[in-house]
Length: 96
Ligand SMILES: C[C@H](O)[C@H](O)[C@H]1CNC2=NC(N)=NC(=O)C2=N1
Image (tube, rainbow, N blue to C red; front, side, top):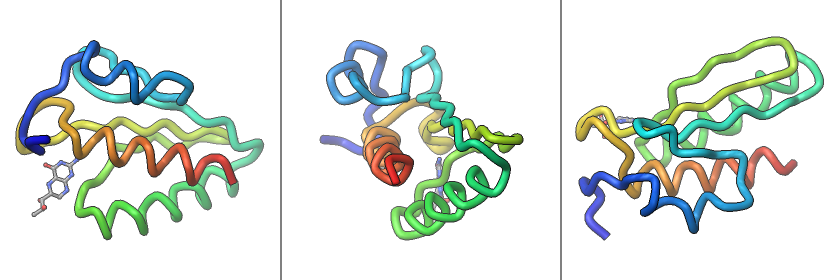
């Protein structure tokens, strides 16, 4: 799949079904409840390691007991297969 291809909501539905992520028309967005602040920080720390390896980085909103990830490809200006792959990895990390 072309990594610069913009994926609309229909194109991401199958992969995102059963995950915390939704496609809001512009970005893939997911919020995870972590119970406390440190849990959110630790999830972000694990995601940051993966993002560095992938060279693809989420926008993040961190709060007490919750963290929101927004995924989109800045270079293309939309959701691409790179965002879908990062969403799958974040889902795996959030399960621990
Ligand atoms: C050179 C490097 O691959 C780019 O600057 C990457 C870094 N991380 C990135 N992350 C995201 N989300 N979008 C990008 O376009 C992007 N570009």
